[in-house]
Length: 390
Image 1 (cartoon, rainbow, N blue to C red):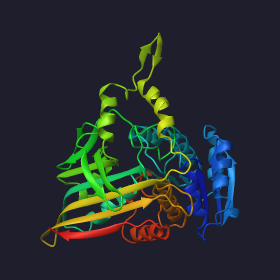
Image 2 (cartoon, one colour):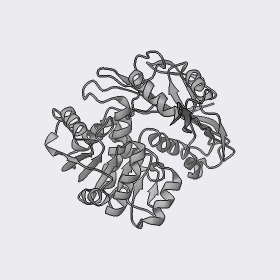
Image 3 (cartoon, rainbow, N blue to C red):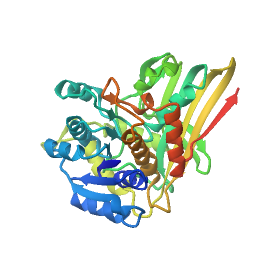
Image 4 (spheres, helix red, strand yellow):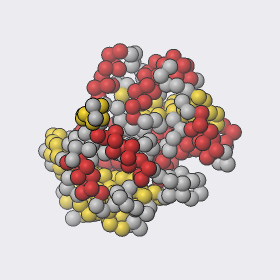
């Protein structure tokens, strides 16, 4: 199997590592527009097993023909890219007819436009295939199909620094230079329908083993989860982000002041976007520095009925920075999940279906779920599942 990794930031090296240590993978290439970033990626992976499988390719995804030509030379690819660049990778994958596993999301309206503009028959683009979205929804489906009826689904997930520091107790663990701060409302599911609540609202205390007390607040329930038959009629569905306590209150102030707005305001005669200013000012304070460690907190809870009895199913994981490999927990849980799924595609375990754009929980259940869990375990990521009769 030959695997291509698009992007060599915080996520790309972990995806490349997971692919190159698979004995069934013959060749792994990492492509990026930045030669400096590629050199940093090479330095990080140089002392790892099977480094000889790796190559590093300068690539501008804006050159669609060149990107498609590169993609055609591989069995599958992983997009570990800043969100604005994802669309370029998807276009290239469609043109090349090479399956693509994307760690993040692309707006549905953008995908609909692509489907009109490009050939999509027989193509496979797996969207939102990281830890969240991705692993959270895969696990939710698996648990839901163990139950006779699901009344509630509650997802909590987030990456936090091991040692919180002022002002926000947060560091950017996914990549890029922008905080994941948004002003628009968040989705919840109620009686099988999507409703909206203020983002950062309803912060609740939540405790994770070995971590202590955190908080979780509304970030946005993924509407496509309701496509799963076992979940389509849930009475309540929430998806909350985990942070150290106090985060929601602080960023709510930024939101209420209009500092998260993407609408330009005039400053000394020039248009200025408030969110861009906030990103630029905050970045030096929230950049993950060399030597800093992170934690990923993951919990999926389903409440309902099984065998005529009230049941609660829960899946939980606390993952930490890997001292042996030097990968952050967020890179492990996000990029390695995507790389595992990409290898499953390359091995023929996952095949294109009726639609080119699909989220991973639509594809991965049964034996494929067991395979994914075994691969995560092999990478020292452990999801513990419990069932309680209430």
